[in-house]
Structures are given as C-alpha cells and as structure tokens.
Length: 115
Image 1 (spheres, rainbow, N blue to C red):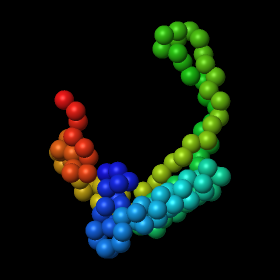
Image 2 (image 1 turned 180 degrees about the horizontal axis):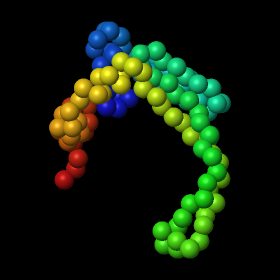
Image 3 (image 1 turned 45 degrees about the vertical axis):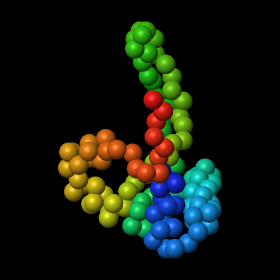
C-alpha cells in the first residue's frame, strides 16, 4: 500500500477532495518525521509508537577478511512498536495469506509495467 492508496481510500470514504486529503496525509507524515528526527517519541493510540533508540558501539567482522575486526560506532535508529490491536490482527494472519497478499496483482492505481 502506498501513500497514494491511503489518500484514495480516505477520499472515497469521506467524500473529501483527494488533493486536500493528500495535503493532510503528507503534513501528518512530515510532523511525525520531524518529531522523531528530534529524538521525540510519537505515540499513535491503537496504531503504534515510533521512537529513537541508540545502538551501542560494537565490533563487527568483515566476512571477506574475518581476521580483521571492524569497530561499529554507536548510532541512533528509529524503532516502531505496533499497538496491541495491530499486533493482535497480524498474529491472526497465516503465512499463506501473507504470501498471497504480497504476490497479488498490482491494484488499479499502479500503472502497468512496460514490456
């Protein structure tokens, strides 16, 4: 699902103009990005939590030269923890339904690939 799919779905359900919905969706995503990039936690009830975690420094190994250790510095990463409702719904999925959803034909909003 793409941002465009979300805009079309909201527009068709609410009757709002797609351009207005697109502006709201885009601004929402920008606000979330800005907050997380400043180290803030964004909690969306019944959806999930975006937060910044710091990974510790560690020693890595180069598979092409395993005798040499590579120091990996500490770094900040974004973590997403799904809310209870989302987690419960995902747990109900069977592996077959996930594979079929991922390999399903593209929807009508996606242009066909050039042959």
